[in-house]
Image 1 (tube, one colour):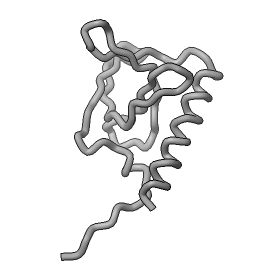
Image 2 (cartoon, rainbow, N blue to C red; image 1 turned 30 degrees about the vertical axis):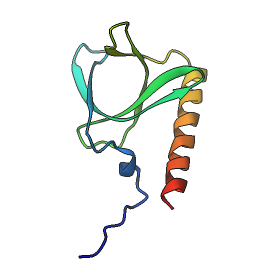
Image 3 (cartoon, helix red, strand yellow; image 1 turned 180 degrees about the vertical axis):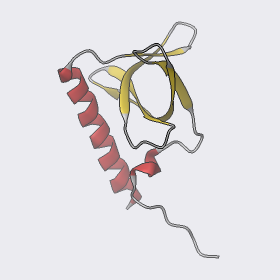
Image 4 (spheres, rainbow, N blue to C red; image 1 turned 120 degrees about the vertical axis):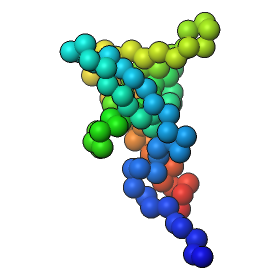
Length: 101
């Protein structure tokens, strides 16, 4: 049997444990996302998720845990904060791709 090689596609960052997050979106409906990564940017924790509907979109939320360790998310408020988060996520992707070489 040959050894299977990983490709350098975005799907490689998905956690093989397939963890999911359900979020109430603006219209009051709940949407389920697959968790891609929890990471720190600008002294806060964030979470990158993608819809389970097969879309390649990536969404970002602030991530935090309460005193009991229960996870929660919140919207990112400003364009400046969003830019910090996406820049860090891009850097993480670049680093992970480099590590795979």
